[in-house]
Amino acid sequence: MSRKKITISVIGLVIIIIAGYIAMMWFSDDRTYNRELNKARDAVAVQDWQTAKQHYQASRKVRVSIENRTASEQLDYLARADKAIKQQSWESAKSLYQRAIDTNGGVPLLEKAAKTNQRIVNAEQDAGKYKASVSSLEKSLDKKDKDLNDVKKQMSDTNASVQAVQDSANKAVADANAAADKANATADSANKQAQDAQKNNKSDEHKDNHKDDNKDK
Image (cartoon, rainbow, N blue to C red; front, side, top):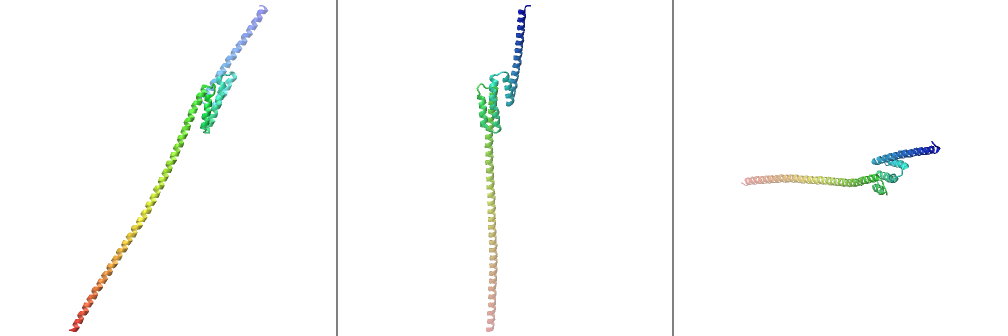
């Protein structure tokens, strides 16, 4: 074999080795890229934003794509919105979810998560308003019950006072009637005594007159 053929063969072998290495590296990187993307998507499914961001960043080190480039921005909005929810800052949370939805070239999976959470926030906000209304109504009813009980107590006290006055008046009438009966009885007794006295006087006068008549005879 000539030196020229040997050189060509060696060069061809080197090219094959390099191409194989490149193909192997590309295949390995592709597997790593897809693995990191799948892990990131799994984390998004359970709304673990921090873990999702780590895997998106790892996939970006292998290969830059629209998904891993915009995901970080959306994940920041989602994480901040969660903090706003913990502080019950509903309007701020809804605004941050909307920014995640409106991100240019945003990841559809993250947009869907933002929309879902935005609906949950709206429901929580409406529930909070409903609870506040119910609480206000309950306080109003409690106040009405208290006012009604106060009125009932006042009526009870008034009735008791009226009853006491009525009992006192009845007693005064009864005492007056008793005093009148006693006075009538006393007057009757006095009249009787006077009548008896008159009868006695008349009887004495008759006796005296009879004696005088006998003397004259």
